[in-house]
Structure formats: C-alpha cells, structure tokens
Image (cartoon, rainbow, N blue to C red):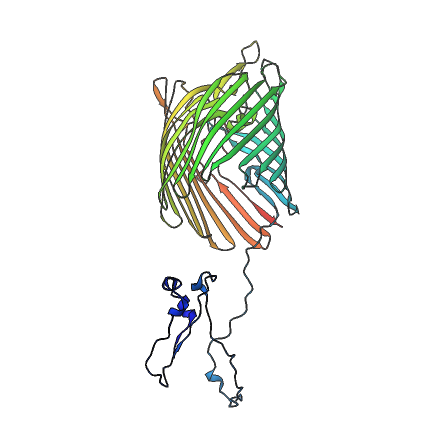
Length: 562
C-alpha cells in the first residue's frame, strides 16, 4: 500500500520548503486510479510545522512484536558406541600461564687455581619495599706464585691481591630517584727484584650522593651527583732513603640539565668539577671545571643529532684552558642500515685511580698533568643484512695531548752509585689514525659471536711514547649453549705492538696472543660449577711495562645463587 503522509514529505527537505508559501486551501486532493485489493491511496492533509528542526533525522520505526518459541522434546541417543570411533589423540593437558623466571637476588662465587689464583665474590640485592632497594657486594681476586720476568730469563715470586666492597641504596620518590653509594678497595702487591720499591699498598674509598628526575612529562630533566673520593699510596720514594705515603682527596660534582623545546628537540648543559687535595709537598692542589652546552634533535627512526662543545678549565697545577668538540650524528638510511659520525674529546683526569689502571707498577717520581683528548673523530656504517647479525665498518683520527706512557728510570740510591730501577709516567702528544671492522651475531640464547679487528698508525715525537701502543689488534668472543644447563665461552686476543726506530734499528715489544676458554654448568637449581683458563698458548709477552707473565693459568669453583 502506498502511503503519502506528512512524515514522508518532511524527508524531502528542500522540496517542502517551497510548499510553505502556499495557502492551505491550495492543497487539494487529486483524483487517483481506482483502489484495488493490493493498492490503496491515502492522502493526508496536515499543516507543516516549521518548529521541527532537522526533520531528516526523525525516524518512525514499525512496531516490533517479541518473538515466542515453542519448546520441543529432547531426544537422547542411548546406543552404545565402540571405543574405536573416539578421537585417536588424547586430550591436551592443561598448562598454566608461562612466566619468565625472576632473577635471583644474590650469589656467591668461590674459585681457586694454579699460581695461587683466587676468586671470591658475593652480591645481594635487598628489595626493602616497592620503592627502596639496597645492594651489597664483596670480592677478593688475585694470585700468588712464581711467574716469568719480562725477559723470560728467570721467575720471581709475584703477588697481587685486590679486595673490594660496595653498598648502593636507592629510593624512588614519585618524580625523583635518590641514590647513596659507597665503595672500599685495597690492592696489595710486590715489585720485581732490583726495583726501587719492593712492595706497595693502595687504599681507596668513596661515598656518593645523587638525585635524578624520573617524570618524563616534565619539561625539564636533571641528574646530579656529588661525592668524596679518598686514595692512599702507602710507599713512595721522592729522594734517597725517603719512603712517604701520599694521600689524594677529591670532591667531584657533576650534573646534567635538559629541557624540551619541541617534541623532537632538546637543549641542555652538563658540568663536572673536580677539587683535588694532597698531603705531600711534592704535589700541588688543583681544580678542574668542565662546561658542556649541547643541542639534540631526534626524528624517530631517521635522524639522531647531538651538537655540543667541551669547555675545560683548570686552576692550580697544570692550569690550562682547552676546548674540544662534542658532536654525534646518526642517520638511518633504511631499516638495519645506519650511517654515523662522531667528533668528541675532553679531559682525562690523571688522578691516582687512573695511574693505577694504566700501570699499577708505576711509581710517582713527579706529579702528572691531566691528559687531554683534543679530537677523536670517526665515521662509520652499520648494517644488519640478516636477523641477529650486525656489521660495523669505521675509521677515524685521534689526537691526545700529554698522553701517558711508561719509562724505566735508573735511580741512584747511595753515594756508591748503586742503581735501582723505577717505572715513571712521562707524557707526550700522540696522534693515531685508525680503521676497523666489527661483526656481531646472536641467535636466541644458543649462540653468540663477536669479532673485531682494528689497525692503528701512530705518531709521536717521543721515542718510547708508542712502545706499548697497538699497531694491529684482533678480538674474538664466541658463546655456545648446546644444552640449557651448559654454557661455553671461547675468547682470543691478538695485539701486535707498534714498531719503533731505536738507535738506527727497528724495535718492537712482543705480541700478545691470549687464547682463553671458560665454561659454566648448572648442577642443581641455584648451584653451578665454573672453570676458566687463560693464556693457553703460553705466550710470554707483558700487557704493560714490566708486568708479570703468568703463563698458562686456570681456576675453577662453584657459584651459589639464592
């Protein structure tokens, strides 16, 4: 049936607007064809109501009658089915949700080996509350046995033990982390015969306080730390018959402030100040100050840019004003292919801690100035042609002013011109051009691989400044886990020293060729066995001037995790 109602006229919108200007009497019923059983025409005359807005949104729905159902009788199949018609696979056992095993909070490692190799270490992390964590650590490593002189002519009874202990506490506030940490260290060792000193003891300690912002929604972020560092060298000879201790006390304060200026841009300034004090008249107190303003731009998955400058000042001993670049850029060509360039530099503080790392057998015949890396520029390309595999090709140029090196000094100790020897820390400018290649591959937790080769071309005005510098270096690390309980590590290190011209001929320190092997086996839950061996090729070349050469050495022990 065709129905012409006012509701339908409203849906015509603009057409009905014309009808509102006509008088009501003009709407006359018109003649139609005779109605039939299937078709009937109804004409409705009704005045248009202009107060109805958005007439096209008015919907009239037909009346809906609720469905009714008639329940039927349920019939069950009571026939017996043979077992052969049942599914041939058994129902899968219910498995709970898989969760990653939580790392254990503490461990103790105990090991011993030949030439008195000792390895004791322990660590425990206390989760005091959801926002408070305390970490304690303790360790002793060292050796005591007969080893070769660098000349390989005879052996001497060498001893070297390092003891360390540390505490680290952190409290997480809503927007800031507060950190307190302290460390203690003790090194006891002896020198080779015919040296000016026969034994030495280094004692170190420090306590640090730091705060770091954690709310990333804030426009400004900061990271601040200050600490008191103590270092004592028990025995030093500055004149015949004089044996004095030297204590170094330093206050170190550093910080970093960054602010967001756009979604992908930041500006910041970092600083570091070192105040060093000595108890011996042979050493002068001094202060260093570093200011590092910078700008950063990050476009996700495309550009990473860091533009800054290092402004270094020193007051007191070695007072100098120096400036070096702080520039880093990275461009992602496509996924897995990255081009990068760096140009950095800065002060290398030659405090007692760095001198011990450089060569613990060196002695303080004078006060060293700080080394300064004027430039360390590199250009490289990283690529990942396959999942888990990375290849890095790079090259660069480095300039270091007042670079440290070692020299043997003959010292007169009595009027009869009796000489003993000492290792000093002279300094000279060095330059280094280098190229290298590094490959990394990692397959799940089963196999990992790292190989790096690097070539150096050194230059210096001092004859022996490059004696222990590497001309060619190759490093290899391979890790395999054939079964979940067994892990095997293989490493190889090869260092070819720089060739020097001495007295009209060529001279070079012996090459380092160190093959090492290690393994760990999980015996029970929380108990593992470990073993490692070093210098399996039994090469007798020192890592630094007049250091002992242990030959083949190994140790093994047990690790308790809890």
